[in-house]
Length: 162
Ligand code: SME
Image 1 (cartoon, protein in one colour):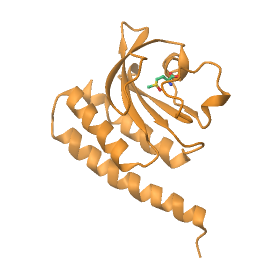
Image 2 (image 1 turned 90 degrees about the vertical axis):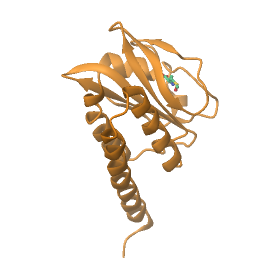
Image 3 (image 1 turned 90 degrees about the horizontal axis):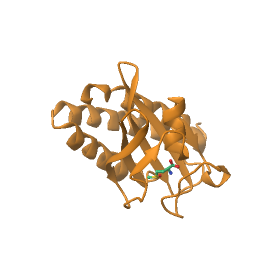
Image 4 (image 1 turned 135 degrees about the vertical axis):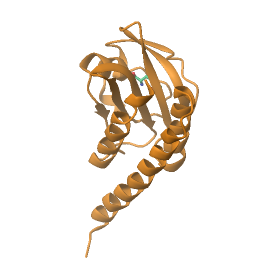
């Protein structure tokens, strides 16, 4: 018999497979980049219960991020210099950053006191950083390896929009 933990991982994998198919259908509609990104934010926020804020930051002038489409509470962090906060660090390192407990971070830009965890995934076009997907959760330690794999797969498939 499978343990509860194994069942949970299985459930996540199934949900992410379904969402990936829906994601491909959204991209195939051929809407503008920002409409497509906005639909993707809605899809993720509505269907993954612990994704409480889902948004894109776009690279501007090669050294800062500017807020693009998002779902969730408005944020004061419209522009973020590379290196600042989790988003800016992910941009500088050009790597996914997963923080299961934001209270452990000194270089962190808070959007809301309710946020407990965050994951930021870079989007590349021809090897150049063009955007980031940023997800905040109100739960502690909400992200599993499945989340990271799914979100990275999404972001790899977003290059076509840029
Ligand atoms: N927490 C982010 C800032 C962006 S908000 O989460 C929307 C950071 O530390 O970079």
